[in-house]
Image (cartoon, rainbow, N blue to C red; front, side, top):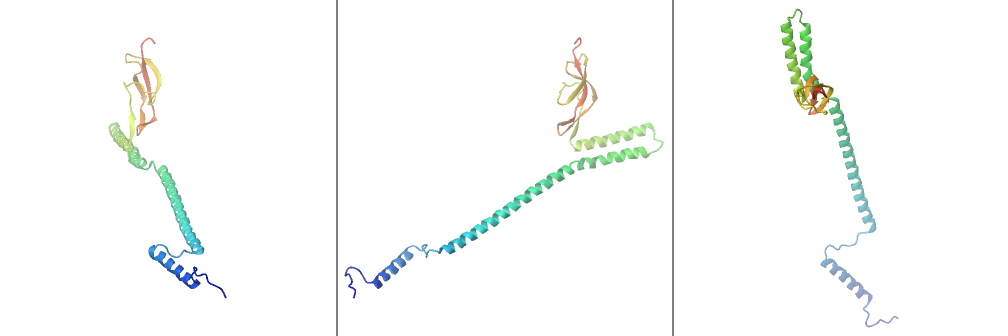
Length: 188
């Protein structure tokens, strides 16, 4: 027979005290629940990882779609950039064809038709922000003008005295420089 140490309580009493202590801790802090098993923790972590992976794949696909749409938009803009201008030029062509179709025109009527056609052309140019550069009597600007020669003149040196061909600007960018002759001082 086993002797019990009078200072050590019996085993049943120890189990009861442990259960009471656990219940006291659980009652004191309701967030403390029983500790989840490692398998349950792993399953939860795998579910979260799968959710994050799915969200990443969706974001990647959306980014690729946005990139592809942007490339398509750029390609279409480039392909159809001249559409508005081409549409504005059609009446000019129609007018020229109509003028050529008329037989036995007088010079005055032909001139009148050409002037109207020129007005249509100028209107189309303005609609496309295509501006004429006529630099007569202006200071020579190598960014906008191409000097063919320099001629002696009473005008201030480096001033445009003759415009051989007008220049054109598209949205203030030179697409064709004006061909000009510039003044130089007499005796140079």
